[in-house]
Image (cartoon, rainbow, N blue to C red; front, side, top):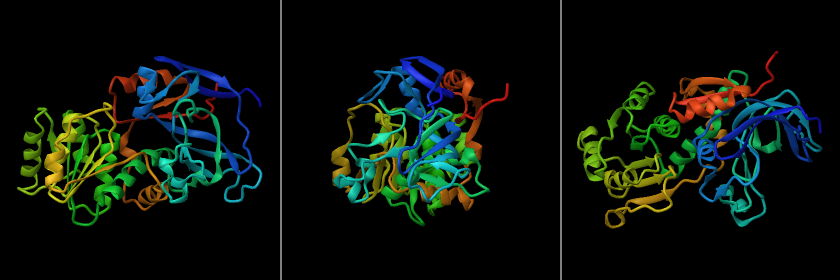
Length: 352
């Protein structure tokens, strides 16, 4: 393998370097992809700042990134669904295809999952990568590479709406106005929700959410979950949301989600915070509020692509900052400082 593959490599906590790594060659059923765009995800920021996320610990140098799009640059043996030059979005979680979860279609729960940039597996903040061809989604000509990269976080939001049962006429509460929360709000609207309330601790993010289509915005200025639940009800004219999508991972937000949701409704937990949390379980039990976990996504990429390609969701305004691959460290430090909404890194070769 030729050593010409510029990559953003995390060696340990806060030690991120741009290095030349070998160009990987596609195996049978795989394609090699020349990466164009890669977004910075919150999980990558956690790996960068802490050196671990949950049980995933950085023990050896690894390439970051998993929100990516690119151009097919080489085909492995037996690939017939793609050709060199195709523009594709990359679904970054490759399951074993053999376990019970894979066989019933819940491949996101596969215990042998290879997920890009989840230690020890390398990610896609690089110029070249390889993956199975059926985990590449061909982009229509009118869908940009940056939009293709945003299929990954949008798939989380689409899957959350599916798990929560968002349909026409439902009232939805979204807790957290970060990238996933914003996409969950937009997805809920696209699925037909009649009203969507979104909460956050940042007024600027709430103002952005309003511009992106939120019906109501609420600033979280207290940790009193019942107080916030009351404000949610007031914002909806005395009605409670049938569905809450919790995207912050904050304990008080999860508590609010349960208190705020209408009896018989659903709380979908998307955000990941502390390993343990105190929740009003008796309140949920007595009112039959279902609590449903959401882990990444499953069979959601094509739906997310349809949302973008048909214009039902416009993700372009979420991209507020752009950097080159050579500027990756600057990009991560900007993200750590809270700059913008979504930072996109261009991984193509830059002219000298």
